[in-house]
Length: 264
Image (cartoon, rainbow, N blue to C red; front, side, top):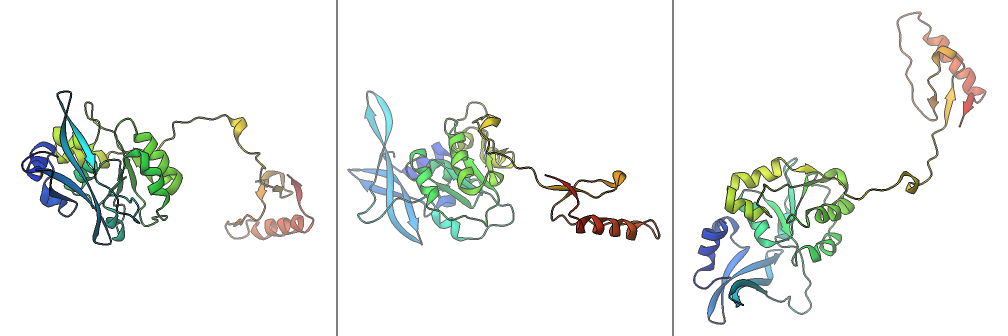
């Protein structure tokens, strides 16, 4: 990423403590400079690395991303090994679209954090390769402000909307690492604590819904006791002694034997 000591500069610039993310990042020496490398580890083995370094481009210090997947291997989620462990009840699983975002959450104390290897472009294919992950009931979408909704939509389609939450960044922050750098790790934890429930931005027309067949209901034959009983519904008749429970039951049984006076 930078000449010199990239791990130290990650801590001073990105505010990510290297000790908190040990094993996920390392320093490599390449082309006469030190670079920060993200370790893609699966089953405890580093399969490949992605690295970043500053390059001059028109006077700007842009970052160049490098690293290749070995022949015969495929991309997979950054920090995918965290999915092996069992979460505590309600403990969040956070999906990111960048390694620094993932590292920011890990630095803030979250155990279950993964990131797509090529940002939002690869998230859908990576998510489709996962199982149901039913042990996680609290799944959080954390993309930069431009792709957050897309990340949530992908996760909702795979895992069910009821499990999905979305982070909302403070004004002036575009992602979790921005929040960490500007507001501190407590603010990163607030992103998860006060996440938004998933919502879908797409709208439709009622005419687009499939045909609806109303459930079959039955009258019981008693005008003041007509509750439109549902077919196969279990009903319990209760009341004090000699209030008419048995009489009601006999009347219901009589109409049941006749097939009821029913409507469909």
